[in-house]
Length: 468
Ligand code: SF4
Image (cartoon, rainbow, N blue to C red; front, side, top):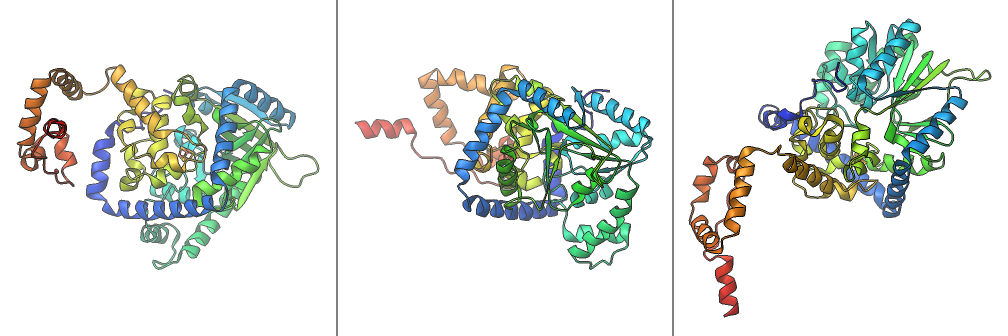
């Protein structure tokens, strides 16, 4: 089995996004409304603090941690082992699956409860557990909704934001017997009641990890519902799947990152629940798991790390702020992107994690407006990284034959002043409104736009007139 599943289909982005816009316009309404709300809350929350200084600090700490990643990972391992946790290293999704299978077999696991973890989505953990005959239950409300629907997440923080309240009412009515006019509190209560039995029945709880402090071996998890705390403390075994980039050097760094991430993600000063997990239950504690396994996962991150430019994307804290402000993401939500991470952050890590050939055309799914870099709490230069992957696409000859021909033709023309002038003249008299709609690329652009009227005089004519 390959490290990354064939279920990921970024290559069909163009068709999938066109299909979403054409066939399910309500997705744009739901996603647009939710992301605008998230973004307004973030703006307010940033304004309440000296967010520029916080973001500079966060950028520096993350950059320092990544620059010394091997050292901090070793330190984290030592700290976690000293706390009584088991530490595993997984270079691929297959490694993670083998580890989970060993735990499932050894402990005769029949039911797993899961906290929201994008890494577990990336690794397709639920599908794999299914092949082992293990029932996995998502316990985050958004994840629970999409699990009932059989859909992947549409957003890294709000997995079900593409769905309306009416969709959820119909789903819960069908699956949990709630009234068709149930209010959101009633829906949440129904999910809570259904999940309570699963928490008590589960042998294994699987979570991600927002951060791991290397000096104390502390796994930090942010949430608003309390389900992560139950997932990590009720079952006998807790497995935390953590990307190798989630390390921060010191426990005290968590104070800044927990607040900044919550402000960027949902506009909260801090998540309603923060779990700081040190290891398994000790003799004098009345709850907590008997075993804690921390799995540090690579799955393509080293490839990203080794890229002199793209490594900056590893600073990401998965807050979703860049998705919320992105005018392209807002049109379709995440499913059109064809894999776990959508929007601007997805477009810059896909080439590293999946390989550039499988990630295309995601680095092109952006207008390069730069709004994402203005909101990113760790100041990842997203537009620069998008351009970086576009350059690599050209250098490796992966751009289309049509684009190569167009660029070569332009270069030839631009080197011949007379021909360039005549071509410009011809273009100025071309009836673009009619012709553009018949040409590839331009026809797509002009579906929603009118071509501007050409200037009666060329720039060169105007320049000449101006200096004579
Ligand atoms: S790239 Fe920045 S804004 Fe986007 S999810 Fe990551 S940390 Fe948040």
